[in-house]
Length: 538
Image (tube, rainbow, N blue to C red):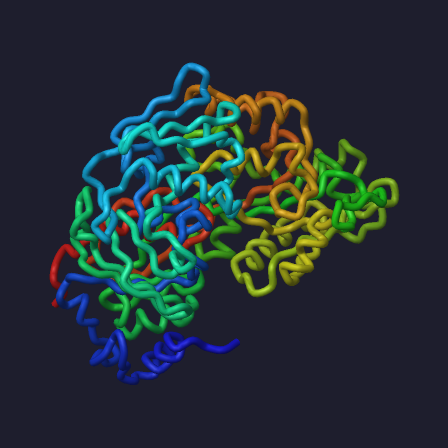
């Protein structure tokens, strides 16, 4: 793979060279000028956005930084106003009315008005990018500071959706907006060098609290390159891996952020009967179609041990796609119980009649494949650690790395080490709604279908209060008899939530981090405007 300019530079740093460019004049081990002056930070992350245009997906699931949103998340995942100063939902559950603040301006000096909000959401709906606005019937500007959304049906996740849609200026929106954006958020766009760096400055005209850090340089590099940059003292914050985070580096500490960034097996729920998807890919697996197999695997895995063995302890046990979120059902937690797992199999007729260590039933051996994307060392390590434990109950899992293209064809008939996790309960709807089974979008390749769950999911989506929505999201997981959890139909065997790990220069306060969703790069920056330097380093 061709190395980018920044990757080459940091390889040189690791060797003790003096780097020119953004870190001009910084020798190995020296602090960058921005850190000494305490008016800037340099952040190294691994994922680069494809666009800075919110209607094309920028900020989806995270804070768009450059643009403002109507509402935003607090650290406890409740909502607070941003561009909106007030909002309410009518009795029908279909009409949302937002009143906007009148002092917000874009960085080109133009006022933010209701027309910009209308333009943003109409453009986003037409773009059909990563923002699902299919439930929005229309959006209208009543006056400069009043916007009315009319939905086609009640949608309880509406606020979750708009909390990540940054408002763009109608007057300054064009084909190049994604690479040269104008916004009204706490940060002002300065420069973007693809595959190298993104530079932002504090927006001095921001209507809210202006960031105490004046400028931010975000550099894009692999975790190994970022680790070398930390060792050389050339970055202030760097995303790192569990395999690297145990190394102590002078002048830095490791920030460990808990997440809902989960990893687990999807297990096909139908037998192999020759059925195929619309794309022609085979459906079904004669081993994992058995509920007792799926539940036995779930009970046999010691999640704490997997976290320790595979990820140096930088993970927590996972029991659902929603762990830690206010809509999660706490009753989905299960205990590790190998004896119970063995009884489940024996009671269902599985036995090791030939003494090879693998149980079988009706001529079918309890052996199947779990795929992971090649190059993903975290998924690989988790899969192998879990598979080793499952051997103790007589089930053999063949762990295989493959390309995403190949995985997308085989995920309906083989298990997959998958990962999800979002700040929006709509993800549960996508993962388990019956009509989503066997599609090419990775949400429900195992083919989970349940009329009871569909009813709970629909009730959650159409609820008129948060409390009613949360109750139905929880019942979809486990209602005492059935559900999507491992106590129920067990379409997933959840294993761990991976911690997000960052080397942070001593003296830099990265604030109270929200529970991070899937992906460890952009979630770090959600509260970037709250970061501050606490003291000058010696």
